Length: 241
Image (cartoon, rainbow, N blue to C red; front, side, top):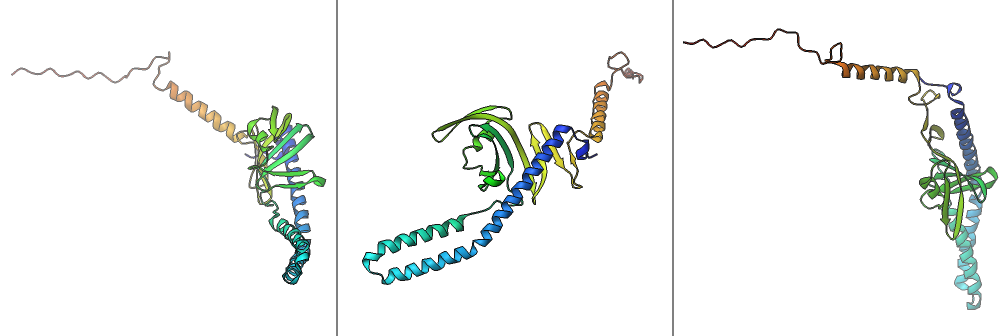
């Protein structure tokens, strides 16, 4: 039997509410960034046109003007490459873990994903778990632990406030794991704690009964193994000829 959010313990409900609010903030931030990137299309086209004009000028310009033209070309090319390489997180599954630390900069939330993304105004920080040094804190320490890590030449010390694994599919939070606590969203949309419902308690009681029956099988009323009540068959004596 599934449990609705109202039937879950208070701390479980608080975790669900916090993670769902965080995901909503991330999705809104990524969508806003996507809209801003769409408005850069004209800027990109302008850079391409500017680069073409500079190339044409460099082809016929005097030697004395080439250093200045080449410098402008390099600047335009760098801006163009920066726009082309910028990637946004996948809104279907933007991150898979949530880390909150209380460190030198105060309390910060970091979301581990596969694409780095930051929006200071929305307090959103997605880090690439493969390259970001702070990701080591997630993999080396547990919730409530004090950590001490060198990030480059800077020693960072603090406390791990939150360490959770999450599963997001199609932009929807479906699983949260915080320590030994596991929360799963059913296909009907209700949240439950696996192994905490009445059906699992009934299954556990059946298992205990089965174990007792197995251990007592073949024992008599006083604990001694029962003997067979079938009559003993005597071996017929061989007849002498």
